[in-house]
Image (cartoon, rainbow, N blue to C red; front, side):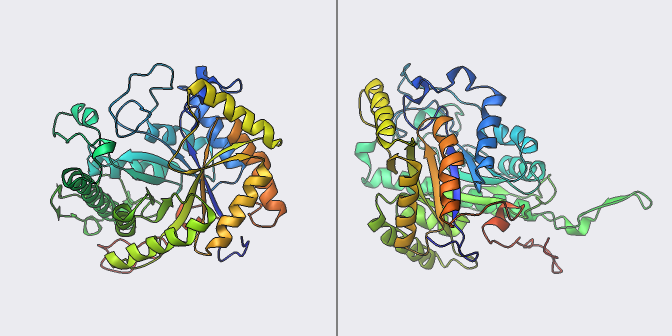
Length: 410
């Protein structure tokens, strides 16, 4: 794992409820009474910022959590059910932090892109250029019923791979791609310098720099322009979690960062190659996708204690911890070994999004033990070296596609 400034290690953290273990809220160090308070989320994001993480994602969905995310709510009462709105969490922690990127999860399936563009642009203004968006689709019929505007076929796990379900899933991803395109156009609809604010002449706006987007597609017909002035980053960072070719292609068309789920170091070169193949297949131009691998982590200076803690939670859950991502249970030093091994497997792996099994315990271990260990090994920065989230990933601030004259990058 290189510390070369041209290929820096990126670390993100995924925040979800009491943690990614289904019984994390019953851990003695958990604080389930605080889950729905601003203080809880502020403390978590500040801890991630203390660890110099690139960004924190905040999970969200339009239905109550379920042990199987494809299933309707399972009505379990022994799990955390219910959550605060991710966009609003990001908004209220933005002025309470200064450097960490804030990336709420927002579905494209029932959310109008006009609303998304406004909310995320506002978050970028609120955070002074640290906003992102983790794009998600909603496959559940009970979530569709909340809105009553469309019916989705029931997509059961055992029906995946059938023509009907594959077509329904492909539609959701196609709609997601169109939604991201509309949102990006709305962000571009205000050129830089549209707001003149010239009290002497009475001109607040330069009308020539405000543009209709006139997008017409299969799912949306949006005229624009947006109502929020161009975000400080031009376009906030777009992030997609992908497990296979169809979603790799969505990421290649629409995203800046893709989150992937290799299960071991030997999988990394294959997954990276699949992402690059998807980029070629869709004709991606510009900067290649930044690739972060996902890991669920449970940490303790004593590896046996970490395993014992997870085993205790497994007992409460009635089954071993399972995830779409690989699981690392051990010491911060052992996790550092894994990160270095995975990154050595492919120089194109840019970093990791880490999912703490228990919050705040495992997040504190990441910030206060893993990061110092990586710094001691000379593979992670000692301070934030940029302000905007795009800049941190080496991505240029895009010019508005509607600008008639070249804009000056800021």
